[in-house]
Length: 395
Image (cartoon, rainbow, N blue to C red; front, side):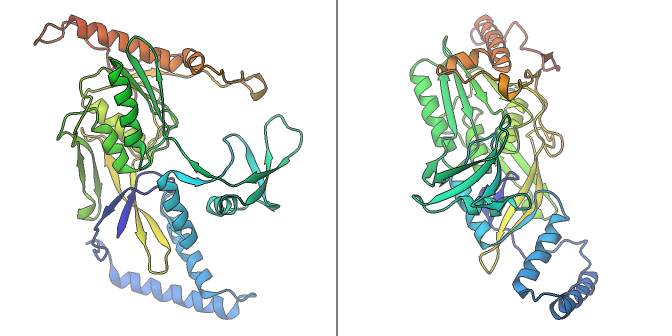
């Protein structure tokens, strides 16, 4: 079985039958075998003459990691433990970790400077109830501090919502996990019962996640049968199309999507699809541009291969990879103040939202969209133009 991953994080997406034995027409098998002979020659020399004896498995794993590291930043080798961690990440539930902003310099006394991320994660996670000591550095501190943390089972809630008044719903989607479409459904149903008239979907700093979740989120807002995203790769069965199969949707409600540089992958799929179909105005700043497909291929010893196999395109054929999604209205966020000057978060979430420049611009756009809707003759065409998709910058 093979699984497709949408982002650079350890997140899986869709089960596919890819016909693993397929070989590209451009592959020169003779040249490949010639180079493999060179590889086995080097392997034999290292095993027999290297100063320290190295287990064959360790040598092979290192060789595989080096091969994939040379391809692109998103292709990698997952040893059995890392492969299991990847599956845990996908579920949205995991053992205790630290909050954003703290720089971890030691884990149980081991320096993290040259530690790979999967190794650090593996050392911090563990059975609920057990303890781990982490040494962290925080901006403004004169020296590192040790924290003894008791591991617990944590469920990441991917959806946060707020009623902004006047029938405007605000939903922030933190990432695309298995339960994200269900959590989004619950929030939408609650707002719908209370007379939702417009929606702001906040995808800022959402790094992506599952492709299936991105498609399920998109299809809540576009008509049944419409294309959400498609992929193109070297192997024919990597060319896939994902269309909406809406059951209960919200395809008519005025809508704005907030994005920024931290919006990547699955976030870009949703924003691109709704932008292409004219279903939402996209407000904020240029997105990250991570639009390649990683196929997770299980290997015989319990390890796995994460390999870039295709690229994503929006319904209108725009490539996401390396380009990202350009907002209809560009609104730059104010620069963050120095840590010592940052105000503490308000206990009232509405107070923080009122200070959000990009969100306030989104509300202005929604007001314009609702005015246009009110001027629309019943059964006719709107008499006023929607906000221009020409780039507008607000600081």
